[in-house]
Image 1 (tube, rainbow, N blue to C red):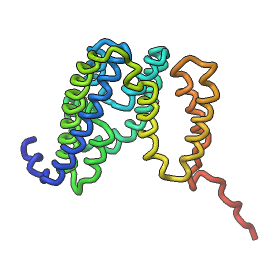
Image 2 (image 1 turned 90 degrees about the vertical axis):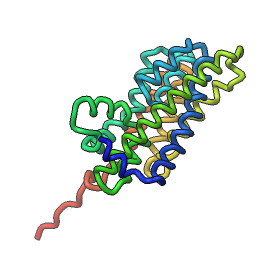
Image 3 (image 1 turned 45 degrees about the horizontal axis):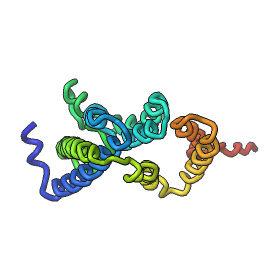
Image 4 (image 1 turned 90 degrees about the horizontal axis):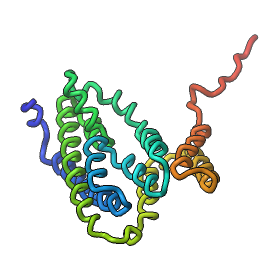
Length: 233
């Protein structure tokens, strides 16, 4: 294992550490907001250790803080993290062969660790980049969450943190990079419209799940479209 770390150059480490620093700041924000929203200090800390998925953690705390049920919050988090299934298939051989490596590597599977691994030229560098990025972000995120949670206990009025605006802003920031392609606007708008239309009538957190109807507007692949009929003589 020690030999693979020699394949990482200074440039890659600079990129990893820069992202880790951003994760620490983001984690501190999450920890402070979660505690200020009324959750015990240990909840965001333990959640970050066991879940380690920033987007899902923001979603869960946002739904619970808005009065939604824990079941709706967990289902929403699972839907949001469903993208990790194809990620796991893409980097399965990179993580390692033993059960211990695969279990720990699965826990460190996030967008950034997959991106760093897939950007490498060979499997050895990919494995080193995956573990370096995943491990660094795990430490930075959890340290940030713990520090933010401690700071959040000093805030008497959670509304001063703008809780109602922070969570939607974070979720929008997660979605925007995926909307660069024109074909993805239609399902996104349909899902948003469905969620907005049902918000006055459904419990908090459920409209997020209703937004899945937007998948009905996903364009079909070219090889799945109707083929022209063969011309007969």
